Every structure is written in C-alpha cells, then in structure tokens.
Image (cartoon, rainbow, N blue to C red; front, top):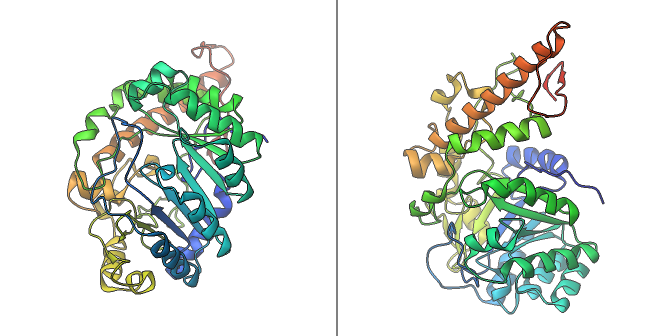
Length: 384
C-alpha cells in the first residue's frame, strides 16, 4: 500500500469518493456520518486536549439504540472517538455493533492501550481507517505533549501491528511550538510505517469553549517556514470552486447537514463542541433531534451568505475557515475567522512564491537557486 506523505483532507482516506457522497448528502440533508465520543476518559494528559464537559457516559444498550437510529437515517459511517476509546471495556463491542448494522466504522485512538487481541479483533471488523494521535517522530517530542513516559513506543507499536494486519492507519498530528521542528520527521516516520499522515495547524478551543489551550497554538510567523518547506514538497492549488464566473464563493461546511456529533453524555451537536446542543439522545431519538427545531435553526444560520468573506481579496486562498472557530473566537458563525484569515495569508504567500519562481525559471538568462528545493511546475489551472 502506498500513501501520500501528507494528507490534507478531512478524513485522510478515500477523500474524493467521500466528498462526492458528502455533497449529495448535504443537498438532501441526509445523515451520512456520525461521530460518537464514547468516553471523555483518557490515559494521557495532552496539553492541547479539547475534551471537556459532563462525565456521564451512555450505556452499551443506549449506544446500540443510537446506532439503530443512525442506520434508520441511512448513515454510512460511524467514527468512535474519545477521550481514549479503549478506556471503555466494551469499545470493540461498540465497533462490532456498527458493522453489524452495515455501516462503516472508523476509530480514533492514541493506541497505547491496544493489546494484540484488540488489534486482531479490530482488524477483523475491517475499519475504513484507524486514526492514531502521534505528535512527534521521537519519544522526547511526543511525550513532551502527552506528558506520559512510554506513550510514544506504545502508540508506534500499535500502528505497526495494525498495519501488519492490513488496517489502513492515519497518523494524526497537531502542530504546536513543541513539535513544529519535528513535523517533517514525523511525516517520514508515517511513510516508514506505511500510514497516511495528516496534521492540523490549529489548536482549537475545548469542547465547552474554554480557549485556554490555544496558548499552544502556533503563530502564523512560526508556521511560515514550515509552509514554505511544504510548498516545494507538495505545491497546493488555490480554490477553483465558485459561482461559475471564476470567483470563489465562501460557504460554511457540511456540519449539521450530512454529519453530527454525539458526546459521551448523549448531547447532539452539528460537530464537536459547536454550540448549542440540539438535544440529548437519552431524552429523544436521534431521528427526532436530526429533524428538530434546533437542528433546523442551525441549518438556516449556516446557509446565510458569508458577505464579509465573499468580499475578501484572500477568499481564493482561504481553505481553513471553520464556523465553530468563527463563532467561539470571533462571535459570529457567518463572519470571518481570524485564524482562517492568518492561514489564508500564508497560502497567498506560498502562491506568490510559486509565481515568482516560475517567472524566474522561464527567464532563459536568469537562474536563481530555490533553497535547494525540487522544481516547481505551474499547470494551466493553477499550482500543481
């Protein structure tokens, strides 16, 4: 199996097919993907952790009912996450219940608690992929973030065994000052382990809106050298989606239209920590909540025109706007997200760098070294 070193899609695996399905589900307001936080408990103490809220957990039977209701809605995919999923003794039973209902299953885990028996049992369920959090290529980097000695080796061992069993694995990284210098080496480790590698440049507020963890967020200035390195390793296209006249159109994401998030206590959200909660599956069925007044109001608000963003000169470079971040950090889910604006400026700098170097390379009399990077090629539709 061959994987790209860097995977910048939402799920990291099978993204083009998923995007087509997601578009159809969005248009029909059909629940395609359900993410279930099976527990808030965890055996690590990651400094940037977003988990927060009530500690109550749904019973095994309550989760089974939830899966029945999701299947009735036509849901195709369920992702089990935490906390750490393996803190629940029935986590494999829950994963098997998803497959029994003819839905695909994904699992997010730190891998440290997975035994040989767990790995074999999980592989037999044929998950679409297993995402494992790994924040560095070496123990000293990873464990400076998880705060638990030995966690690096246990996570890597789980990844290695799952790959031996044929499970598609995704290494999930979050960029922070403590590991930014090591992100390329972490990608190389992912390649050696034959795993998809994805990273998030933004530490987000906790699920309850607490922004204290964002002190671990990497600034735009700190990100620029990394973005520049990625530019030559894998040039990115600017946005080409739009109104048919060559101008991109800002839109909110599909959260609440084709996907939903259920936290460990049973509260339903359009996505993790995107307030307000639509309802509680302990008090109403998922089907009632999905069609209820809170969900309907959310969709109306999400469909409002993003007028400020649509007037922005950075729009075609903006690929990271999150309505949850816009709401929690800037007060308006339909307004700009200052973090997305920062990242859009970086993408524009990347594009300008490419255009400049392409012009230089086309000048037969001028040769300028490019920081030792491989040749950059421009195609007709943009940066390739």
